[in-house]
Image 1: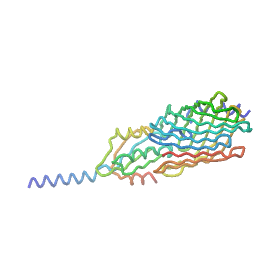
Image 2 (image 1 turned 180 degrees about the vertical axis):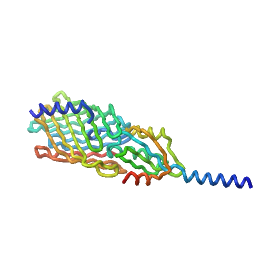
Image 3 (image 1 turned 120 degrees about the vertical axis):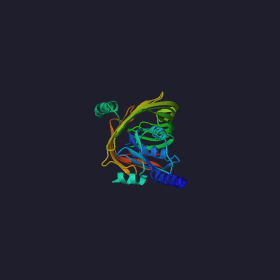
Image 4 (image 1 turned 90 degrees about the horizontal axis):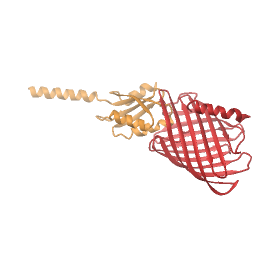
Length: 108
Length: 221
């Protein structure tokens, strides 16, 4: 009985955790003023196996990338990638929001 | 007389701060291809590869035609571009580039082919709505020396989106030394550019005060 309860609890926790897994990464980036030049960012971020789409918002200096299920990219790699593209990363945050929701919120 | 005012103004804008034009470096592992038709006075095609975001290497071809038809020159060159300094600001970016190269020149005002050296500086400052760029380059060979200075100031009627098309109105002033052109060659340009998943495209064109065509196109991929 106890074993069943523990197994059930673990299954519930696992399901909850999966449902709450981060689906996107948002980066605040300085120097983001030209679509022509920022194209390198999109190319580089799409090079990660974990990437499921990239969104760039020039007006708010924001770069967001979608994450494939149960995947992530370390902050150090993200910072290095954007630095190599010629930009300065000011902040990185993760969200359970999918990329489409971030894009929609910033497209208004 | 026009040059008396134009060159100091260019110098002030160049050294007082930042300016941007077609940048000679795309991004790490990126290619840049540029072609310019400069009102019948100069025509240039260039292509560069950037191993890092702060330098690129490449080659180009420059054609110079003196305004009065006294001479023309063709210069083939290899060149390195370096980003000396970049300021990434919350709502702006500024850059200083330096470049130098070597090539071979032929011309109607000297015989044979000569080795030619080139060096230059480019500085830029841009936001989503304001743009400025100053560039100075010198070409030197035993038979000739000439310098080309270009200043651009632009504004955007709207802040472009990353997946949209950017529109800019740009005023350009250019001077030449070495008897190529007397005065300031001024032009008003319409600039359009867009980034797509396969690369970025840039096109600008407009008339000079002399009624000639000034045009430039660029691709990053």
